[in-house]
Length: 456
Figure 1 (cartoon, helix red, strand yellow):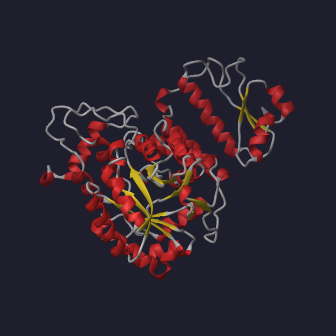
Figure 2 (tube, one colour):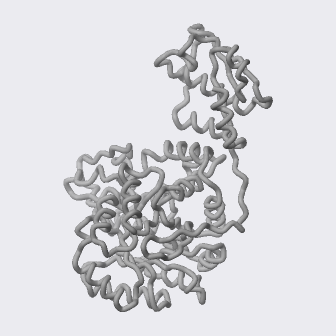
Figure 3 (cartoon, rainbow, N blue to C red):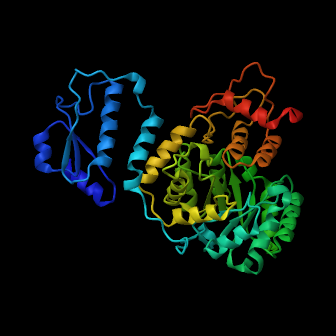
């Protein structure tokens, strides 16, 4: 045990051992140990005695912080089968993690890197475009000065869309870039791809708003099926725009049915990039789909990387959003990320996060954050598809609530609800269930309140 602990601590991670043989611990001298005079095979207590086991875990975490001298052994006072452990004081998963985070956050703290640390550069798949691993989602950015600050800090990938902010977002990006347009990769999106004419018209509007002669990455927005990816009018329009020199690369973006969409993009052979929801709460199979896409030459861009960005779910001692960014950056196949930015402080936090590797502190932060949001954050796993007899687009409804509660963007949330299939409100009971634990009935009720009676 001592050898393992010392190896872990060489990586900067504090450890605590739980021993039931004091003589061995005295000989091996692990960095920190708590000792219990309990039978072999029961270092944490009796089987199925959850309150007893939680008590030992909490005492061990407390000792982890308090032990100052290497090799110290702390005797815990608990006697085998002679103590009463109150269930009323038991720790839930969240409260136990909160205690652990609060006690070890200081020892595990990373040094804050300087803003001078510029994000690393990666290659965007077969496009061969060099992009910063930390990009910028401009979707809700109201101030072009934030764009300018990101550019000055080394960010070279900027993502917008024709419909963002009522059509004003591309112009904000153009103002922020100014004369430095050639220094960066600009990605935008087409929302209406029902016909060749609609796609080309949307591209022309984007070129005008962006004040540019070409778009580096032109994407079909919010694709959710194989049929949409392979639609003849989409392939024809993108080929026409590419031949005319108005776009350099073509891509798709997806918030739902991501694995299906990614597979179709690989199959099509004409797309250069895929922008997908991807975070530490990824649904099963998505990570593998990302790796397959990258292996096939597609440049993979990750969005929704903060898993909702719910500020009320974060423990004050930690920043799970920095951990979430670091988690995505270390995933194989990811070329760049586009966290949304509205302030200089967010930019600084993202730059700081990208300058440090994922570590134990991040793992703790994400575990705690996940426990806090699991009843309201949609993993977009697709398990609810087809459950609603009236065709409610549950993932879109959940995404709208995320924009409202996590991003603080009520207008965007209502626009998302207005565009989604949302026939809820008159059913006797909701038949949709979530295998990931989201409380669908409560969430739909919240969405109805957000939408309001005027649109019901």
